[in-house]
Image (tube, rainbow, N blue to C red; front, side, top):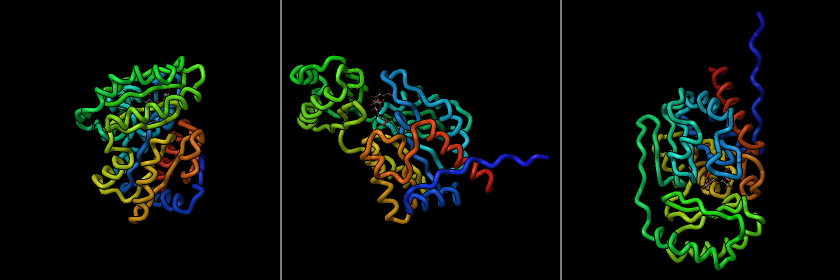
Length: 285
Ligand SMILES: O=P(O)(O)OC[C@H]1O[C@H](O[C@H]2O[C@H](CO)[C@@H](O)[C@H](O)[C@H]2O)[C@H](O)[C@@H](O)[C@@H]1O
C-alpha cells in the first residue's frame, strides 16, 4: 500500500527568533495563539472594500488549524461583524471558537457565543465627521477618492483615485490635523487614511488576547502599517520569553516586510502556511 504523501515542507523563517517561534508552535500547538489581519492577509486586496472576501484557501486552512492550537483571533481595522461576513467565518466547522477583534481591537465578536461587544464612539468622532467635507475640499477633493464610514471610525480611500499615491500624499497632512483637533488617531494604510479612536491598536489587542488565553507562543500575520503595533507586541512578548513568529503577507509595505521573520506572497501563501502548520502538527501527534 502506498504511504501517504509528505506535506510540503514549511518555509524556514529568515531569523533565529522566527525559527524559535515556529518550533515552539509546532512542538506545543495547544499553547499557541494565532493572530491574523484580514485585508491583505486573509483576503486579497481589491478596489472595492465591500467586495473583499477571504481567499478560497483561507477558511479551510483556518478550520484545520484552529482545533489544534489554543486560539485563533482575526484582528482587523474592519468592524468585526463585517469581517465575519466577508470572511465567511460564522457557523464554519472548526471555527467554533474563533474571535474577531474589530476596529483595531476596540470591538469583539466571539464565535462561541455569537456576541458582539462594541464600545461607545468617542465624542470627537461626530465632530471630525462633520468637519471632514471641508477638510477634503481644502485639500482639493482628489478625484476618485471616497470615504468609508465604519460607525466607530471613517476611512478615506485613494485606491480608486485618478492619482492614488498623489491623493494619499495630499490628504495625509490635512487628515492628520483633523484627527489631532478632535483627539483621534490617524491610521495610514494601503491607499487608505483612517480616522479612529486613540487608546487601542492591534498590539494592545494582541497582548491582551495572549494574556487572556495564557498562550505560550504566538504567530502573527499582517500586511500593512496598522500591523506594526502587533509586531511590536510580539517583540515584547519574546522579551518576556514567549516565542513568536512574525509573518508578512506580501512586500508592498516595506516597513512591515523588513520586520518580518517570514515574508510570503500574499493571502494564498498565508493560507498555505497555516494549512502546512496544521498538517505538520497532525502528522507529528
Ligand atoms: O486591518 P485590516 O483587516 O487589514 O483592515 C484595514 C483596512 O482594510 C480595508 O482597506 C484595505 O482593503 C481594501 C479591500 O481590499 C482596499 O480597497 C483598500 O485599499 C485597503 O486599504 C478596509 O476598507 C478598511 O476599512 C480597513 O481599515
